[in-house]
Image (cartoon, rainbow, N blue to C red):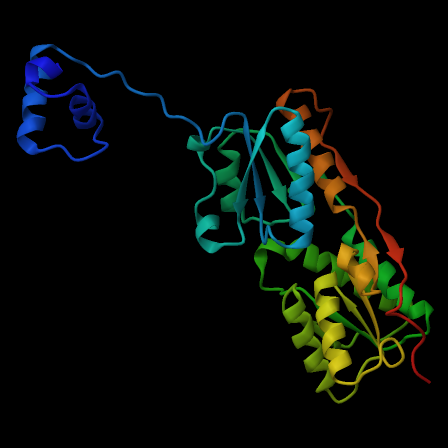
Length: 323
């Protein structure tokens, strides 16, 4: 074809594939040569994003829990011969562009993220196994913790120290992607207060987000209130650390004037001497990935719903209330 058109073979290739510019008259000579030789290009099959790929759908993938869980997922799947494609569903644009058939996926792992019925229907159209880390998806294998019980344990620790005025630093309730964890930990907070016969005061339930900035802002609001509680339960260690910084800058002694307890037990919690509820984030990811491999191999028995244990880790940020 190149000889007939009087051009180099590379020019023919560039013209037929459209990978770079070829002059119009040259393209026409190549087209006529192709017609004369009855050349019919073979259609290339579409290649998936990665062979044997599994998509991990996670909001805030750089945050501690998500990074730990996805790390566990990747370790197990890589050992099983699969690659992990991370998709940030906390980003609106990425959320609108959920995985499709062209991704060539073998399965999905949903990491502590909620979806609307329409979004779930789109993902189910892929007809691949799905497992869940944290949160829930009815009818799908799940590995997580009992968020409600963990939150109740945190608040009962404060009550056991003698606190009766306990605030909640909560996640943003308008964040639909993580609403199930938010609701469960809020219920645990309310459970513990109610069981102890203590009043649930809405003005002490401040829900702004899930990072240190949100924790700091939430405590600023409490400091500006008519009455300051003697303890706070933060739904994450990040929020608790933000709260600690604001309290210390305001001259509020911790734990002498106010006790603070978090949730997660990140590595930094130990160095901050933060009392917290420890959860095995990486192990949750590993277990969910193992279930997915069984589902891909069609050896998974039933629909497991597994809660790994949490535990109270007492450090220096909690103590008895002031007299």
